[in-house]
Image (tube, rainbow, N blue to C red):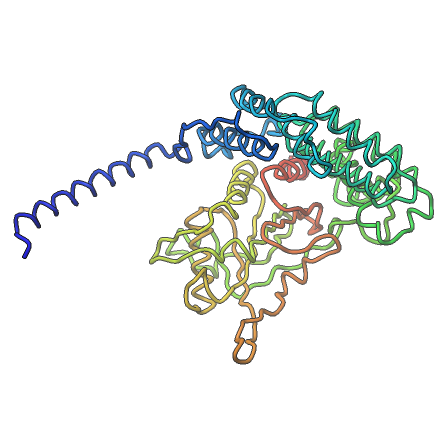
Length: 483
C-alpha cells in the first residue's frame, strides 16, 4: 500500500515538472522568430572519406546558420536572389576541412558529380575543374547521349552550390551548344531553357540580357523544317515567351497601357519575330475571353465580417466588367489538410499555400481597385474528418480564407459531383468542375495557386502560378492597366 504522503510528494514533483515544461514551451514561443534551437555539437569532418559526407556536413552547417534567421522573411522585399548568396565563412571552412581528406586517385567514374559539388562548396574550383576534365576525357569517345548526360549532371552540381557561378554555367552551356549537332533539337532547346530559367531566378539583369538574346538568336536560326516539328512546339513557345518578357518588357507594358488589343497585337508580332509558330491563339491563355465564374456557394469578405450584410446585396458576376480582375484557383491542395475545430481552424501543412495568401494580401493592399475572386470546390471532407455536407465545407473554407487569413476577396465554391466505386473499393471519384474546364488551356492546367489576370474588357492578359517570385509579373501588368 502506498502512503498518502508519498502520493502527495509524487504529485508535487509532477506538477513542478509540468510547470517547468510549460514555462520552457512558452519561452520558446516568445522566441518564435527562430525555427528551433539547433545543437551546437560539432562533427569531426576530418574523419570523412567520401564526398557525400562532406556535402551532408555543409548542408547541416548551412541549415544551422539559416535556422537562426527570421522565419517570416516573406514580409521583406524580394531584392535579390538566394542563388547569389555566399555560404557563411564558417561553412566554407568546414567544407574545406572535409575535402582535404579526399584523394583524387580514389575517384570512381560515377562519383564525379558529388566530388565536383564538394570541391565547389569548399571554394576549390580548380579541383572541381580537374574532376570535370577527367570525366570529359572518359566520355570523349562515347556516344553523344553520354556527353549530354555529363553536361546535365555537372550543371546540376554547379547550380546547387551557393553562390552560383553564372559565368561557369554560361561557359558550360556554350561548350555543349557548339558541339551538339542540329539534329539534337530537343536537347538544344532544353539547354537554352535551363539557362533562361537560371538567369530569371538569379535576377542578374546583365546575365539575363545575354541569355535572352542568345535564346532568340537560336530560335531565329531554326530552319523551316525544325520550326514545323510539332513535338517541340511547346518548348519553343516557352523559350520565346521567357526571352521576350525580358527583352521587350517596356514595349509590352507600354502597349498594355494603350489597350488590350494593342497588347495582344504586339505579343503576336514578337512571337513571330522570335521564330515561334503562332496559330490562331497566343500561348498560356493570353487573349482568351475569361469565362464567367460559376459557383454553388458564394461568400465575400464584407459579408463574412458583417453579420448584418447579406450575400444577396453583392454583385457576384465574376470577373467584374470594367475592372482589373485576379482569379485565383485554390481548388485542390490548399484546403484538404485543414482540420475544423469549432470556430478555430488548424492547418496541418502551413507551407503548402501560405505563400499565396501573402501574395494576395500584398496585391490587394497595393492595388485596392482590383477585384479578386478565389475559386474552389468541395472535397467531401477536410483532412481526416468524416464526410461533411458541401454547404458546411464551403462555410469552413470561407472562414479559413476570408476570416482567418483575412483575404479581401470573393469566394466561389462549387459542389463537386461524384460517384463511388462498388465494394470493396468504395473510393469517391470526383467529376470535372465547370470552372476548371473553362480555365484549362494549352499549357495551362488548373492546380492550386494557378491565377489569371483579366483586363477590364474581360480578356486574359497573363496566367501563372502565383508565387513570391511571379508576383512581380502580376504587379507590372496591373500597374500598366490601372495607372
